[in-house]
Every structure is written in C-alpha cells, then in structure tokens.
Amino acid sequence: MIGIALAICGAALAVGLAGTGSAIGMGIAGQAASGVVSEEPEKFGKALLMEALPGTQGIYGFLGGFWVIMKLDLLSGATPIDAATGLQFLFACLPIAIAGLSSGIFQGKVSAAGIGIIAKKPDESGKGIILSAMVETYAVLGLLATILLINGIQLGG
Image (tube, rainbow, N blue to C red; front, side, top):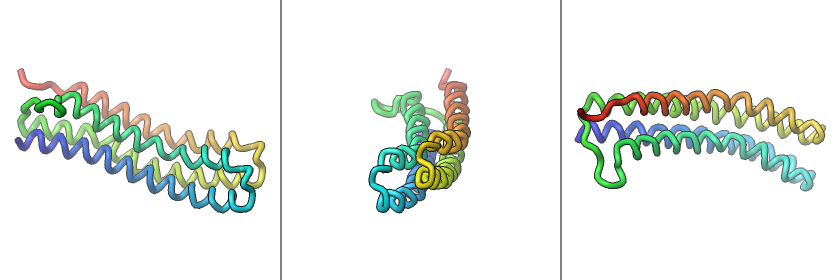
C-alpha cells in the first residue's frame, strides 16, 4: 500500500506543482495583458497568446501524472508495488514538478515583458513569443526526463 501511496504522491506533485507554476505565470502575464487591453482592446488576441504560453507547464505536469496513472493501472485497480518502487515513481515525477513550477512562473514574467512589446511595437510581438518560448524549453526537458524515468521503472517480476 505504501508503494502506491508514494507513486500517487509523485503524480500529485507533478500535476500540482506544474499547475501552480502555470497559474502563477498566467496570472502575472494576465495582469500585464489587462493593462494593455484596457487601453487598446484591439491588442487582445496578441496579449491572450502571450498570457496562454505559461499554461503549458500545467499540461506537462498533468501528462507526467497521467503517465504514472497509466503505468500503474490506477484507474482499474492498481498494480501492487513495494515502497522502493513507489519512491522511484515519486522521484521520477520531480523533474516536471520542479521544472514546471519554476519555468511556469518565469515564463509568466517573460510573457508579461512580451506584452510590453505588444503595447509599444505590436509588429514585433513574435520576438516576445520567442523569448517566452525559450523558458519553456526547460519544462519540456523536465517532462521528457519524467517520462524516461517512469518508463525505466520495472514493475514486479
């Protein structure tokens, strides 16, 4: 039982921390977008795109948690695992949990700065998107590490 609990804890951290990073990042970018759109409503579409970018970390965290759920067949009865295997799942979920939390927040800050570009030079908005996407690279790497680690865990013999 403790093994499954540890694995579920890992999945919950992946979803919860990456989702928190996205929520904070989107909040930061959304505040900047609201200021721009209140003055120039026609810039809503570009500002919305910039605000949405930090939301991907939450999706990546969900994918990491979902990978655990599927590998352990948690939706239809759970494969029994020992505590050591549960810890492996917990630790395997940490890359996306940590990378998702931190990159979501910092991508929100970069997106907010990109919204400043939209406010002053809307034709240059692509540069803001690229700058924001650079931060996301580390969330993608965190998700990749989590998936590779989960796939490497051997279940029962």
